Image 1 (cartoon, rainbow, N blue to C red):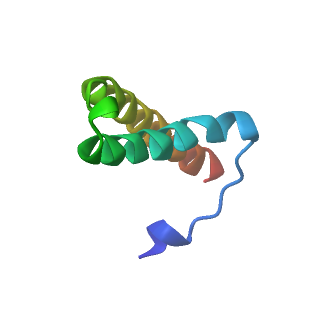
Image 2 (cartoon, rainbow, N blue to C red):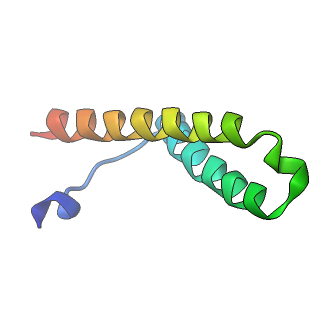
Length: 67
């Protein structure tokens, strides 16, 4: 699949949503095993969802711009 062979460059500012995405899923997994974080489960899931959509949007925008 040529989709995964595309090369793009990311600045640190553009990489923030990806970092938020990864960090929030780690917190969600941690919430499953720990009571303290489980109170914030829906907040972290919301942050994860927003950051996934944001990251994929940025990725697709960069791929279209590269053509």
